Image (cartoon, rainbow, N blue to C red; front, side, top):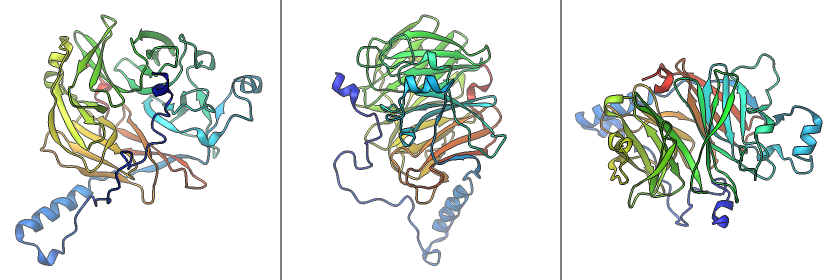
Length: 382
């Protein structure tokens, strides 16, 4: 089990991770307009309208390399000797935004001692800001079961708490933390899971009867369900479907989970009503197929799903109130990286996007923002 846990989670994964050589499929087929029938012309124009929905991003901050803002040089030397620390190893993992702060979890590496940081959403000067150790250096410690060891998925609830998934370590189980951003960043370890595994991301289901977290583990055939009120977690089996990315619809009366099938472009959905009641098995229904395999999904308060894909230079979207139809949301020409994007919505209708391009100089990291007139559905209590 330790050998499995030690695998670098996603950085070594390539688009052909199954060892299958395959020809790259184009996302769109282009047909000369002169050879089209009236019906096909209508379809062509519909495709053009979908491209018009692509967001217009502006750059907020750029970095050639990321570094921590240490409390002191002494703390830097004690935590990470200069011979070990490699700024190029710092890679964004998950993102959340609240107020004037942006939060990032980072891929863990031997030269990445802290995996949860914060940034301002704007820079007052020309210098790119350093990463603030969040909530503090003292709260982190790999191999210490009472500290944040390896942060992964992030979510913010309607009362301003940052929920943090913690991978754990060889000797420590995976954990779940909350950090009260509206109350001096008070930090609580709220749950220890009965496993240590590749815990991936979570979504929050806030109901009048309590808050539930639905959590995926890398390639596991189940969803982990956590009830805050009961402080209990249990397994929701999804036989035959290895899950990875997850999203949750905004409508309380008919709320649904959306999950991607690992090693596949398939998108599935399942009602959460029975899940809240403690059911232990689900058989999600197929919605459609993305153009590639998503590693990250997010749903806004209008029911639009955004998806980023392994090794792809684009983000897609789909309006879940309509039959499945993938649309272009954002594309970065020439971008080549296994995990090129991480993103989040804020409470003011902005879509925040971190782009990582290891081959681009001098701007390997870029923080972008676009006004999309949509928010995380948790921006207001349900």
